[in-house]
Image 1 (cartoon, rainbow, N blue to C red):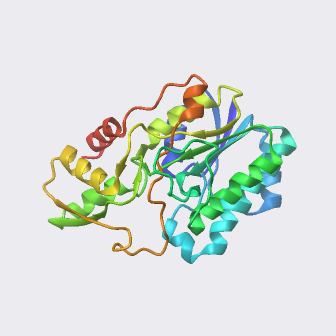
Image 2 (image 1 turned 30 degrees about the horizontal axis):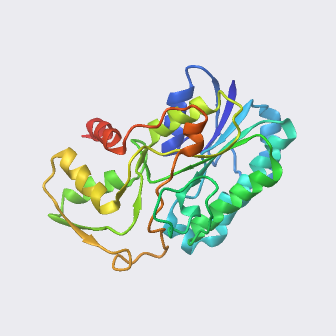
Length: 279
């Protein structure tokens, strides 16, 4: 297949290239070569390229930044996705869109399935939901992939930040009342590579298996990396940040499993591989 990837220079974009380049012809774009907020350019670019499928891994993902730059968040995460959907509709091309656990409000205390009630509480979550809504309105052929707590070797992320902080601090405060599933971008990229070989269109939750709080995750990272740091648990309200986060956003990968795909490995296995690569 000829696959166009937006945000190809991002953390997930790099791993999508690794997962797909052997079998497919890739058209790699960045915000410089394809500004998805420019409707006419996006439609023209995709109509000229004539891909068999588009994977949108471009997004404004700075959750606190979105709170302070609302118009940019909606331009990229909402209107930009709508522009891609319009372009894909012109050439009858499926769109894979990467969405987020932050479209949920965090009030449910059991793993969230794809049709659970949504209710984002941050600008980031609300802008990502706008993107999902545009796809549902415009396209029949789509894969909306909601994922969570991403980390990988090619970008800024929580495990990397923790290990960097540990170099100069003997104690680190980490939130304990937000629970989710850390997801390793190479595992997610591999799952997407399997999904696009099918026509099982729809909404999918795809994360690594298991769940933890940020505090538990930090402690496990230090344990695996053999770093002696004291992790002090704090509440989200004590750890003041511009954007609110859902307190519980574990995603149940029910549609993924129902369609015959194998559950992704436990996040504990994945983080061991990641730390082995970066240390």
